[in-house]
Structure formats: C-alpha cells, structure tokens
Length: 256
Ligand SMILES: [Zn+2]
Ligand SMILES: [Zn+2]
Image (cartoon, rainbow, N blue to C red):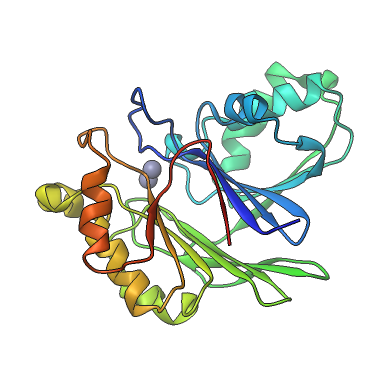
C-alpha cells in the first residue's frame, strides 16, 4: 500500500458549505492513523469507506472543539459495529476528563471495546508512539491552548508532519526538516493578517515560508477560515513562496 493522507475535514472552527472541521486519515507503512477528529469525521469516513478495523490510534492536536468534537460519535459508532480491539487516543490529559463521562453515559456497559487514553504533554517534543516500523513525535506549537503537531516517521525513511493550529513558528523548522509531506494550517490569507495574529493562527504565506525554510518536499495547506470563500487565494499566496503547495481538499487522498 502507498503512503497517503486522506482529508476528512479541512475547515476551521466554523463549518461551511465546502468545509468540515479538521480530520485526516494517514496511511503509513500499512497502518492507519486518525489525526484530529472534528465533528462529522466519522460520517465522511463511512461515506469514503475507510476501513475502521485497521484504525488503532487517534492523535488529537489540542482540545478546541473543531479538533475533537467528533470523538464521541466515532466511538459510539465503532461500538455499534461491534469493534473489539482497543482504540488508543493520544491527547492532552484533559481529554479523558471530558470524554470519559460522555462514553460512560452514552455507551456505558454496551461499549464493545476499550478506549485507552495516552496523556501527552503538547509543550514538550517527545516520542509518544513507537512500534517496529513507525515513530510518532510531538511538535510543540504556539496556539491559545496547549497544542502540538505530530511527526510520523516510517523507519523506511518516509516522514509526514502534521502542523495543526499555530502562529508562525520557525522554531519547528529543525524538527520537520526535509519531510516528504508537510501539512500546515493556513487559516487566513494576507488580507486577514491582524486577525490571524490575534487568533494565533497562520496565513497561507507563513505556512509556505515554513515549508520552504524546512526544505519540505511538498506542502498541503488547510484549516481554512470561513471568512475566505475562494480557496484559490490561499493557494495563490502560498505558491508565491513555495511551489510544491496543494490545497487540502476534502475527500481527496494525497499520496507521498
Ligand atoms: Zn482549529
Ligand atoms: Zn485551535
């Protein structure tokens, strides 16, 4: 199987007719990982026929709703499908406090599988997952609440970096240097630069600058604000800095 990422949601907090909140399926070295789980992620997964039996781990970048409101629906659905293998969730420790009562209330004794929480410290760069072929490392980011991205390294050398909600943060460059594919949030266009700063997000141009300076092979941008209708504007501004840029279009799979 080729290494690829499938975009389930590439909008920011406010859903629009063209975007749902964040979610991606990463297929790396025959394994599937869910990265962020905004509202609606499970619906798109079912519509695309994503095989949930192969999904063992979920990585949540931070606890803003547009990155985790989809978890309870997903867990409830997996239980209705009689899943038996555990589901491992890597996230800030508060997630368990917030989600466990919902799981207990809505699924209770009927839950067909175990949900295993792995608390992570988003402020610290650390390896949080490792098996024979893959490691996953946190990438500390600059956002309103504790947030990290994730660097997935296949020991056969392929690397995918997921850089979730963040201000422009050149500090991450050494860690993601030379990645095969970088996903970087690009919430705003140049026109909204002041708002971008106050809400601790990045512009498309800033995302492209990170990709260029990190010598990433390819860049994927997403987390588009509802304030910008024409996504070609994001692409246009990013392309001026980094030519190998693509938009994270929902329901599309990007191989790398
Ligand atoms: Zn967000
Ligand atoms: Zn956020």
